[in-house]
Length: 254
Ligand SMILES: C[S@@+](CC[C@H](N)C(=O)[O-])C[C@H]1O[C@@H](n2cnc3c(N)ncnc32)[C@H](O)[C@@H]1O
Image (cartoon, rainbow, N blue to C red):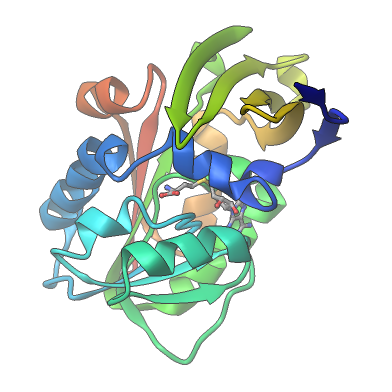
């Protein structure tokens, strides 16, 4: 077996090694969270939601489910993730873009950020995203955001391991979450990925630095952007995501 050079990188899981993301995630994994998002939109909308903008849509695993209820447009930083989203959801529209600055002439009944907001690393970035979402919404439109990590319930130094195999390639995927100090407002998700097939062996270490902010900071920025804001922790969401996950709803009352 030939040993290839090991690689230390940032975000390769969403770019050059996006095929690994495809191996370790599936549309089925995202079914419960997608059902939750649809239910919460229906519960909080003041007008029927037809068009939906999904910021940080990744490879389209959630869109596969939510497109049954809404006309979906997705935006993501990674062209590789979007290539995969387009294959899964040819009927959806996709754009490469940054949720902090994405613009289009279209306006939407709902903007959702259910699986990527934790990548924001400062209240200034939160403000950019919430103000931008407000611009992209129709009057009376709804913003729905799921924050996966709460510093008060952070799974410090949690490690998970899974191995998947497909077409002769075996991938062992190790994820570790570690917050160096809560006052820093960030944590590292480190992915150690062992890739083995008959010919090669490779270890990839991919480090993602994410934000870790108290709930009241999120809430303050949502209100500051002009939304009529609601925030709550919900056992159903915690069961789907993890302990500490919470929901932010912004109503664009104009
Ligand atoms: C956990 S993945 C989402 C996976 C997705 N649910 C799926 O079905 O594949 C997080 C995504 O957020 C995207 N992302 C992170 N920061 C972003 C930003 N500022 N603007 C747009 N997308 C962003 C990444 O490129 C990545 O695709």
